[in-house]
Length: 122
Image (cartoon, rainbow, N blue to C red; front, side, top):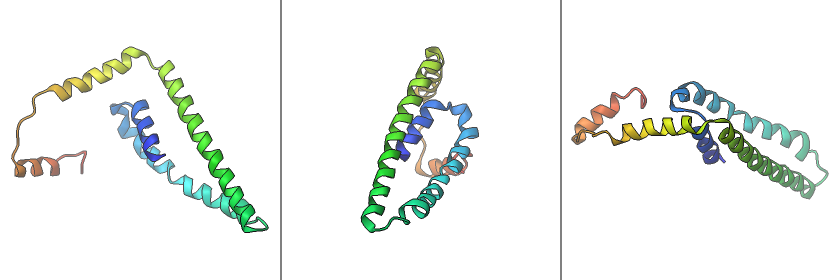
């Protein structure tokens, strides 16, 4: 699910906006364990026996999986219809131009120095 989410985030958020939105996405992802814990305490642990508790957890997980698939599909459809094709192609062409530019060959030590001075990796 994490890989599916970040794939969707990369498709929806442009490179320019990534610095603004990715910390928010990471922050919001920390709420899932809290919600799961509340569900277990309020509903699953109050069951009269283990089998009922397990059934409640299974239903909750199946419902969550269905909702994730549904929302992923709906968001993909909404974004694909809403975002003009030329905007997507323009961003991709800019990235392709950057990839096609000649990159200098560096030695191992030069590569280490370059990576350590990069603001993105820092």
